Amino acid sequence: MTDIRKVTVLGAGVLGSQIAFQTAFKGFEVTSYDIDDKALDAARGRFAGLVDTYRREVPGADDGSAAATLDRLALTSDLDAAVADADLVIEAIPEILSLKQDTYRRIGSAAPERTIFATNSSTLLPSDLADATGRPDRFLALHFANRVWSSNTAEVMGTERTDPAVYRRVVEFATAIGMVPIELHKEKAGYVLNSLLVPFLNSAAALAAGGYAEPADVDKTWKIATGAPLGPFQIFDIIGLTTPYNIMAHGDEAAQKLAVWLKENYIDKGKLGIASGEGFYRY
Amino acid sequence: MTDIRKVTVLGAGVLGSQIAFQTAFKGFEVTSYDIDDKALDAARGRFAGLVDTYRREVPGADDGSAAATLDRLALTSDLDAAVADADLVIEAIPEILSLKQDTYRRIGSAAPERTIFATNSSTLLPSDLADATGRPDRFLALHFANRVWSSNTAEVMGTERTDPAVYRRVVEFATAIGMVPIELHKEKAGYVLNSLLVPFLNSAAALAAGGYAEPADVDKTWKIATGAPLGPFQIFDIIGLTTPYNIMAHGDEAAQKLAVWLKENYIDKGKLGIASGEGFYRY
Image 1 (cartoon, each protein chain N blue to C red):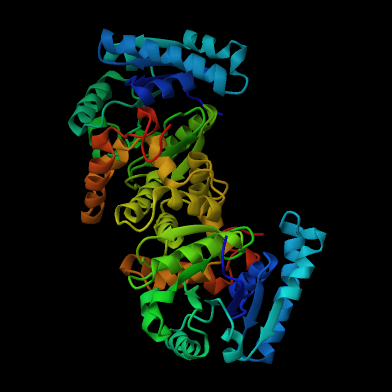
Image 2 (cartoon, chains in turn purple, cyan):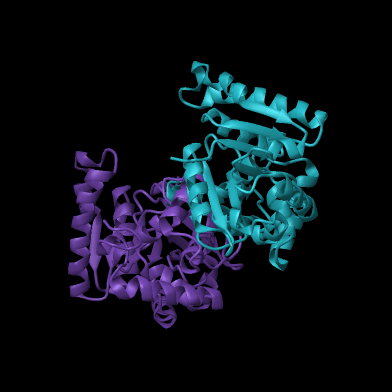
């Protein structure tokens, strides 16, 4: 059980809106914050879309509970008000260090002492942000994966300064909103999932980019050998090629070469994955 | 269809016996060679075991066809005789360069000109062996995975000197014995499967060895995110920890550290995987 009741989610983009919706769906009072009316309009569209998605894809959610979720979701563009009575703030704003630091400084003053702050950042470490929060003992990372209703891991990662009791409360909260908490004992760039996925996708890309084997044969090999439903190039297409490209472009020399290959042969040709109708495969 | 009729498999160890049995099961006349009577007795035991395994695990093989396979399997410890009338020789002897080279020199003289030679070597490249065969144009790698009746990929990899027509004939043969041929266009250590599996298992081991996350949580993350039936540590346990250990021990500095971790925490404690009753998990 969790003693957290009121949750504020900062940022109502793709993942922020999913986190807010899932939390409200599980019975919590949620405030969804974004910067202005235009962003909030977009958020309303996302929430309406999520009602449909949950109805279709979440077992039991077609009984009215998906629609009723909206009753527990308040939207605001007033940051101070958004955090004024929160037990937990989950931050899912753009991955820009200075923007996040400024935001933490501001909510560090505006939120009550008791409020726990959690960042959903994929690329920054919580220790990059801890000082700006003014409450490093009540700050940690809580990292969700896209499509939270089905890819329901929540990676929990503190800094050396995170209070272990706060860490436990966030693990309990993650469970309470239907997530499978994945506990990291130390800070790690990429958490667990990307620490596995990045080298896996890079090794697959290296086979195709080096002219050793065709993507379809690489996928076939992996699926037969491990019983997996998806090979690495199918995973590329599901994620979309832009995110792996960005990670490769910031990697070592070998990874940067793969980034160039991915860009010239796929991204520049509009082959971005399933969402664009074609990636390594056609859809 | 394939024009290959008579197949000789050199080495009747775990994989050699499986390759010979699978080939005979699919209707080919197979000669299984090993060095002496003791090795051939062990081979007979393996073939008897494979009859039972195929009966249980291969759809349709409980109609007598698994037992009848033995009628197409001849055993011999006479190397010259074993290859004297072979269309294809598949070599699955121990991974010792000089031993393989000596063997290829000998069968290069003993086998007819038409005979194709294929190595199942996991760790050597076919170009390490091509000269010793005396027929580099009719030599390539045909690499099977353990449990060939279910993990039925056959990676086909030539050298720059392999005749493309020979390559095609071996691809057709692989299909004819129920394998899914995985075509490599260039030599690559580790072929496709190990080129994916090694970095994948290493990245998982690095998470646990570094104290970042528990093996069970790493597996959970991978399975939820990708829909795979097995996480990396379950795959470690199925393969057995000794093989990944040997690969890590021959890797770069980071991999060697993982090898030490694997040895001290698991292998030295008799935790070798499923076969020993315990690895990362208990069975």
